[in-house]
Amino acid sequence: MYEVDDLDAVIEITEAPVPCGGAPLPIVLANDHGVVLSYWLPEVPPPYKSRGVESCAIVSFVRPAVHLLGQPNDEAIEGHPLWGRGLHIYGVFRVLNSSLIRSLEKMNSVHPRHNPDQYTSLSHYVFTFHDTCFECVAQSLSAESVEVQEDAERIAKMAERLAARLG
Image (tube, rainbow, N blue to C red; front, side, top):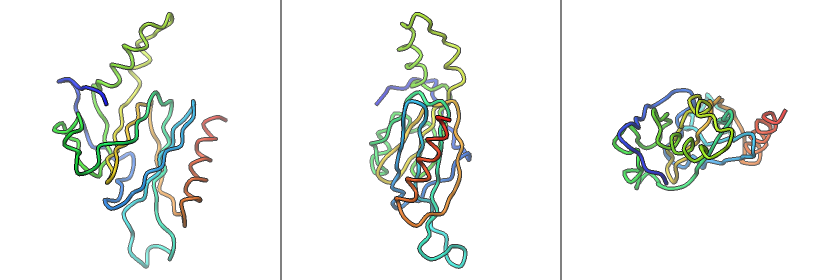
């Protein structure tokens, strides 16, 4: 994980849908040019959805610098370094004055053509799920809700978004 200081502040954002509280089962696809996250959304009762169709979010990150998927889960979220600063379970957040971004900039400062200004355009995003957290430092994100029947279809849609980052 990473350490935070007194500057880190967490705000809840609405640029991506809130995950379901049960089993959102996040999936991450990534390469050198992009990161795509998908997770299940809260169930919509009939007659508003078709039988066998589920809604999921597909979130694409623009110019990602780093991403993390793993602990803590919802029962251990109080151990997350951003707990107590606005982070809570089952939400989507942005970290203002992120220690993680500042540590990435410091790490890169040994590069002969280091430009600290390139880090000012980055945002630190946190998604809290039932069993995991996902964090990504990127320039921005775009999110959409799509309906799929199975994980294979969800992964195919994610792969399309990732391939578009290469184009």
